[in-house]
Image 1 (cartoon, one colour):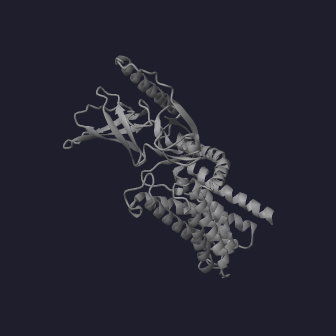
Image 2: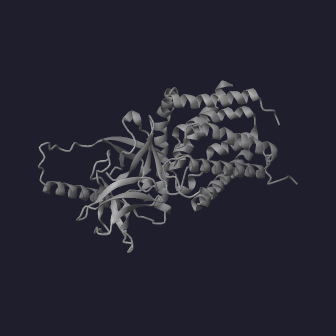
Image 3: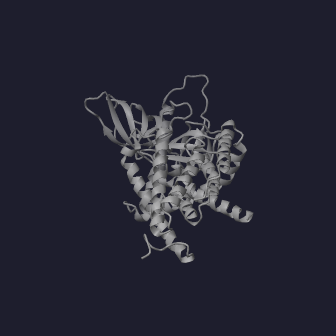
Length: 269
Length: 176
């Protein structure tokens, strides 16, 4: 076996050390931006192709062998559900009397469109985590804890860990994504959602006195700083009263398909 | 010589892009394909000059930029994987037979998967599991998919490469 040249090894270690040092001091930003400039559009294209294959596989070989008519009907239901939530919100606001002198119109939300360029990067597939990466970041005014929507306006997750050119998204079905929500039931029940093993969303800490039903629409409550209220999150699919407990729980059915997420919009406050 | 190096760099960067962006979008069971490790296995079997460790600098840098782990992790991790793989190729899986390719692939994929999950467990970030990863069914299932898929691909490429070159020994263990 050839002897290892220790000079070469030292040079390699020094290079690695320098790169890490430059990163944390910000000196490597031009290089990193250059790499992102080249890779982001390529990544988006490759991700689209991969997702296309994934969608094809799911349509033809998935357990629920959905006909194309079923798929288009599902999409229609999603759109109508979002519309319904928005109309209910408008109805409630119109009924209330606005006595404040500084009444102002709601401005149309600002948003940034972004491509999903990677999912669970580097094989980091963990229990209950669904993490996406998008090709927009701090230089596009993104920051942590912003709402991320799909093309139908349904909340799919929140941003976290934003770098200059990329941002990570935690999906609402992931363990660590929590959202302040309210239900469109009679009492406007509030709660906090948390993801459950990457599959469903749990709604916890609902007082037993609250009356919730399967099918109730769930929207953002506006209690979080950067997330406006009224954004559709999902529908209640299961309720667990837990007879001896103070709180009841519910499960929400998300209204989006992870495999279809290729473009998202991030709402900017 | 520089043109050859340039094309090799483009090829390696292409592999990294495919792994990071294309493969992560594929159906779940295909996401464990690791073209960088497969490239490492074949490049070691065809010539294991230690200088090849420098190719893992751009690989590690790109992985670090697009990874959720602290910057610098993959800059250190990928060269260590190379060193481990080279050690295995030089000392244990030496005869370029089919078995040596499979053995090298198995050991490198196993070490890669174990240490990556260990790092993910210890570094804070979104979706950190409450359970230690070795106790998780998902981990073992993912490991099975990772090993199986990469072994199958190495088998295919070995057989294709065997048609193109005489340097491989198309026997399982030893020639009779």
